Image 1 (cartoon, helix red, strand yellow):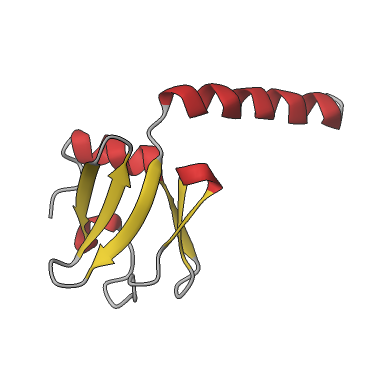
Image 2 (cartoon, rainbow, N blue to C red; image 1 turned 180 degrees about the vertical axis):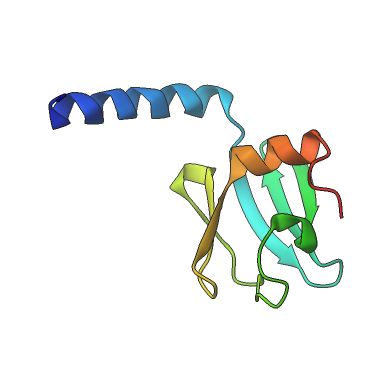
Length: 99
């Protein structure tokens, strides 16, 4: 079995590499008028994802959404659910998150 220190070092290296190439949000909000999760990325780029396409419970309160993990993670405390920003961005670009 690999020593814990080596496992941590490898995980940290993977995280540093991902930080260079994976999209990270700089802000997030839930637009209640349009019923969309709005992610903002560097360069004033916004991505709006329909709430129904997120795969979360339809009755969930998504208005309290938090950006965590250096811009890689979203957290919805009211339903104790999270999402990985790079996966959401890829899915939206590949048209897998259509409403």
